[in-house]
Image 1: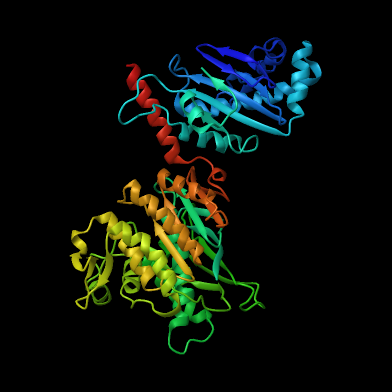
Image 2: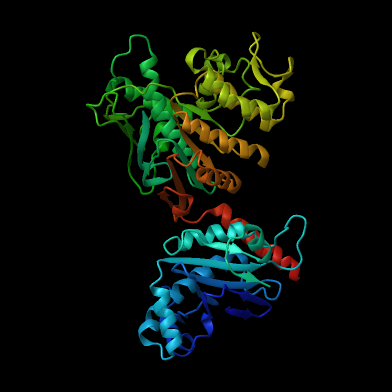
Length: 185
Length: 360
């Protein structure tokens, strides 16, 4: 049974799934991320900025030919991303991760990474999931500091071409909705 | 007959815009000042003029001469500009021309020899009170459209129409038009069953039935006891207005409903009911156009459109976005196709501020 731990969260995937910490792949860290050193310049001030490449946290492949891109944001621990930027950040990570997979299939040096990239790109469906744990202190007016429906709707607008039904879930919601096959503790 | 498309060139905030409408539900979304109400009003005015002439005694086919004056008069009465030319966009010096085109879709079983009826009119920035009709429709639209403004009209109804006709009142003519429809007699005959079905959930929510007495005042009949409309909650008066228009047959079988901010003055519980009512009206042959800011209403409609009961509803969504001095229209079959939704972005920004306040 693949088990992946990301900070304070542990993801348990079904036994016949493949799942890996994607942003820890050697191909991503040592090879593909260099693409992000390419500079884009702003037409107004001609200031050059590295475009940057980012990757999702977990890549999983189920037994029904579906590839799951999972990003984790635990606001109990960190509040690095503003809620208004959250969906945009996930969309860019998914886009960059798909590009990473294409290159990894032909150029990854680690055999396991190459074969998983190959398996991911042979899948017939792509799903995107944001695992969003809420800030620890809710209030009466903000029972959820970040409304997952808002983030999900914005994400849906951005990545409709990749997954028209992205999910934004947390430990509580995933149990209630029974929406995914893995568990998180 | 449905409004299939509308094109605006140099009309108020729009330099160039095309709206391809669905025959059932059309939702227009945008921030304040993006032109949502202008779209509703120009489409309403065009349909009203295309229907009203057919109701006149001895009406023949629409003529250019009639429409030239009728369109101008209606635009002035609905938009209330100082003069007609104020509705033409002024984005550069000199005289500029404004053009509006409406295509009506004609069902195959009627007038099948005409692919679509087309009304096109134009005027320029110096026009006082007359349009040029460049294209005359082949036939009259068969039913007057209904326009619901953001506030309810039942409480101003008594005497409003006669006052409007005899005095100069600074109210838009949509109010008068809707008051006339509110005062129409109750529909009878074959449609009664369908009307009852549509009215039931509204009457359940209001706790009574809408009654127009001989004195020309509206009351809510609660178990035989009449309550003055002024004493009924503002949100329920809006429901009462819709209920009355259904009962009189204006919103049954076929027709057009333009509803500006249906959510105004309503709590979420009633907005939920309004969303369902809108889709029931669509199912009953009404082409509905709404302009909204409410994320709650949009989501309610989106949820209902996934429901097997309403899944077949043909819907279009329009996002109006400011791009410098211009308005850009993004449209599609789902709410995800219309670009950024300001109400959504503001909710997300509020989360930013809330989390920030928690960490301070």
